[in-house]
Image (cartoon, rainbow, N blue to C red; front, side):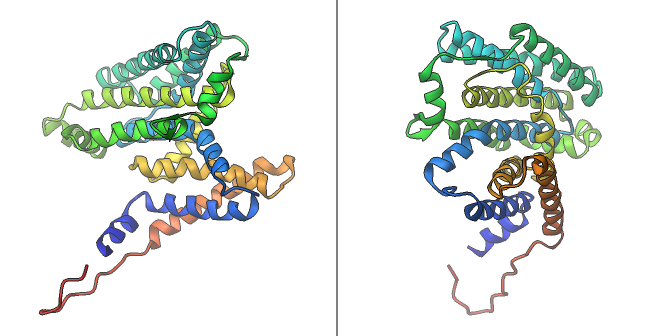
Length: 323
């Protein structure tokens, strides 16, 4: 038990977890009914899109890359998905169309960064313009979905007894855990730590970069589909703000840990609940959110520096094994 606690407190995700728990506890006092099952499910519904994007970006960052196109990918997947659903196309087929379009953008990012060795910031900034422009071509103005079952599936539906919104978070995590247990997962960390050494060790760094951008595009598409259910329609600009929020969540989460990134994203959404729960004047809500976020980042830095280390007592000869 002590060894497990020691590993948890030493994890790079631990500071983000502490921040998330602290704000969650604060919200139990500030927001009426916050601890209820319906409120918790509503929070997961709202946080799922950003969590998916944050997990996606964290893996790209682990591999030494960067991606600012994720918000634009959300936009183009959202309008594509909603357009197909509104035309009577089955939800699953429409989702595959949206995911396919996202993967095309991810493919472009991966080829340009991984094989042509272009700057990832400039490359993904360019593909942001391409994806957001395509989203406007598909749906120039926001449009709703006239399908009550569509919205109900996202708000209260479940698959195998697990709420739909939870699945949107689980899918990217499960895929990452599978990758992490393979040699390819080790390659991602190796390339991110020192690409030259990884290359001379025989690791195909170009393939690693290519794959991380594909993975990021897929996870982002999952997040876009979740967001489509949340807003009950399509909006060609709905995801643009999510890119910078994902960057902030990745930094808060420890930059090299998708689990920490997930906690960072949830922390950011909990701040919104805190500001509303404290009944702060609407004119000052943006400023209040920024101040709380800065305080959280400062606290996270202090936790990283002084986080507790559980010291195991030395066992003397003849002592019985402690369970």
